[in-house]
Amino acid sequence: MCGIIGILGRHEVSPQLVDALRRLEYRGYDSAGVATVDGAGRLERRRAVGKLVNLSDLLV
Image 1: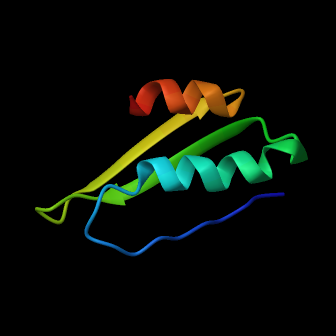
Image 2 (image 1 turned 180 degrees about the horizontal axis):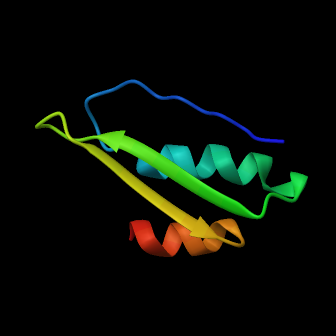
């Protein structure tokens, strides 16, 4: 089972992505990740095994 969330914007979206993932966390996922595109068009991907707090720590 997975949850997919998308946000389109020119501002920093990582906090909103993590908040949206937090709303899905109760489902018992064993990992989480986000992918964003920076101003130069590069894909940036962050992933973490375990609880969502592990991903949040990588994004700070």
